[in-house]
Image: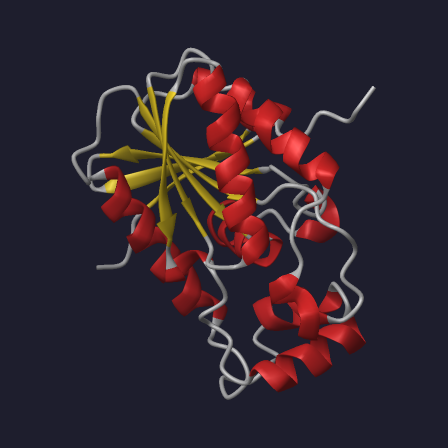
Length: 222
């Protein structure tokens, strides 16, 4: 039996008041051994099937908008989620790429590639700890604030009562949002899996961020 990705997110969507947003990782891709080629790596055939199954799991949601990173695998994930959702009777629309969902925070891409290849997953911890200079990558606090403003705008954008917005992005980005709002470090909570992420609701001027059984109310920076 094929592995089921995204089950926790689908369960969270069913429990969440709407409108809601999901800040999530793309579908399965091949291993990336060199970050220099990462932008051109798409999802696998199994990833396509997983994304379509995730979309089918949205049955019962009236409307879904899907935004994605400009990177290939996120665009492919969005398209296959929409295909599965439409087959399940959901009004699903792929809105298109958003720079906020990509890696616009990279300042010196060559140095990020060098450090990322050398450090592996420890690169994220060094970044979050402020150990990588601003000439290489923007400070995590600034990037987190940008994500929260982005999600706030989306949830206030003529939000329909039963609409769910999916924001398909990358593992580093979801890890930053999860740790920055809920304090969940990947060393203890685990790396973000494919089609996994956090669910966000707007509560007045605040946001409620949910991951598994953890939740927090955060105030976006103006």
